[in-house]
Amino acid sequence: MTTQHASPITLHVDLGDRSYPISIGQLLLSDANLINRHVAGKRVAVVTNTTVGPLYLDKLVRMLSDAGKQVTTIVLPDGEEEKNWSSLMRVFDVLLQEKCDRKTTLVALGGGVIGDLTGFAAATYMRGIPFIQVPTTLLAQVDSSVGGKTGINHPLGKNMIGAFYQPQAVIADTSTLETLPARELSAGLAEVIKYGAIIDVAFFEWIEANIAKLASRDANALAYAIRRSCELKADVVRQDEREGGLRAILNFGHTFGHAIEAGLGYGEWLHGEAVGCGMVMAADLSQRLGFIDAATKERVTALVKAAGLPVVAPDLGKERWLELMQVDKKNEGGQIKFILLKPLGTSIIMPAPQDALLATLEACVG
Image 1 (spheres, one colour):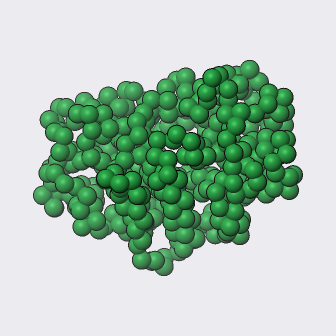
Image 2: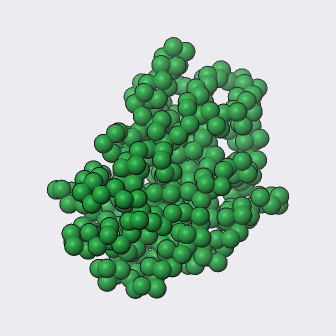
């Protein structure tokens, strides 16, 4: 990553008394005032994993301790397959053993799994305690840490158990992306592409022009991508916090993607890899229904591929594909609902005709 340091920026998620700031910038994990400002009580419990913990946990604990906080740490195994009931119970076990009260602030230090799981723990421990998101992956910084969706996976479906629960703050230190494996960086770019495809065609064009810079971790390009993604998501969340309608568009590519994750076994493909491939499939379906032309479908496919993401779906078997897509929070009355492009830069939510859906599965599965 290049070393120029842009000054940090702060965005606001406007949700009335649940509003909170998103701070984006380099070396924010070294800013003791920024983190301590959002910790009201004396007790803090930091939840992280075995990959992120060795990199950043000591520094964070030291800063909190120096400010007079009593800090508990909880280190979970890494991986999507760990976003489950037993990991959640491990968090509760420690909170109860350490006699953490309802003034305790939980801090989620890690990627989307840690953020989702810690947020769900915060939503339900003593019926709700404060928490702070400190996302350390691109995917978490542009998507999962913002908007208050928390939860765990179930063997039968992804993110089916959870709560809407907003953090006190999101602190996105872009310096953490320097230690991010290339595969994780690509996974995060899937969610960046998503925002352009469904909401902002000018942003989609900017990503097309800058994908090489993003893939090579250019600091300025990444900073803009994170900022614009958070602005777009914050605006959608402000309008529809609990996914009554509009917010569902943020699941573009996710109906296919979640089926891939559950069908292969959580952790086999990263969430962003499954979403990237899912967006290619959703673009294919959009074209079959006459909402976009072949050239637009090719643009989406080419951009997903340029981000280092898979564009050919795994062969789960037609029946299994349909069965997995039936378990999706957007579905109503047994109909599988898809977010489709109509046209690029805007979207529509609708059930797809069975013949078009089967044709997409046929065309996109390797």
